[in-house]
Length: 287
Image 1: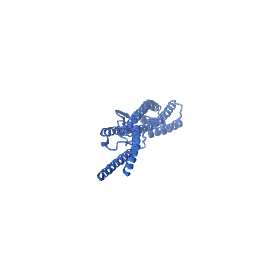
Image 2: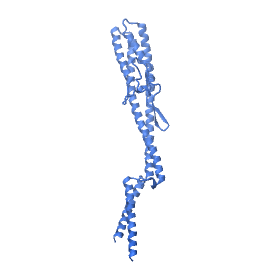
Image 3: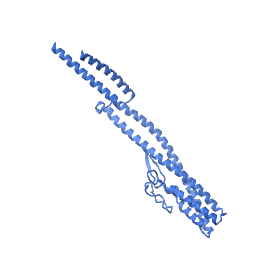
Image 4: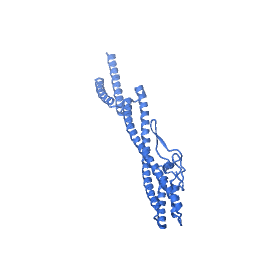
């Protein structure tokens, strides 16, 4: 009889200990917000979780790269808009100068206006981004794209970034592709407008070259702006697709680690059942 009582005591104690352990395990999973706490809990689930987490990290990295690329291109888009305004104003000045109705003082005033516009255009061409890199120098972003005389000295390759799996995108334009040799022609036109006495033949020649350079510049600008617009639209599309993939992958990670709604609901139900079982075991142990 004594042996039977001790045996029953031992059995009840072991049963209660197991209930406590089971209960603690369930609460650990609830506190962690997932059922998979260690790889041994579900080796295949742990493998899937690592795979999906790696995929998620890659997708989030691409999203960050696209955000950076978008910021850079929107900044460039604003600069190119300013370039267009200046080029249009310069074209008007050149046309006015070609009319032949200006006297010496008028020509000198016009030359001063064009010189100021040229300086503004030059400053835009040598714009830096928020990190101090020259926008229009390609991969030679620590070198100003144009020297004081207006000659291009930047890189020969435009900067690109990988914005999604298998998708590389140009995120800046080269200065020589956007501005060409416009500064040299503007400088020559200003010199001839300021010449005293005037050399009509040289002035007409310089103004004609400046006009053609501005026409070419406006055409190049339009192509650059169209390319930027296309790239920004592509980023919008990639963002939509990327966000969808990120959401799908998050669900896969949650399913792999048991953090999905169904698993968590099941754990809550298990915790209630475990509490009842533990209470029953304690009552038996105490009786």
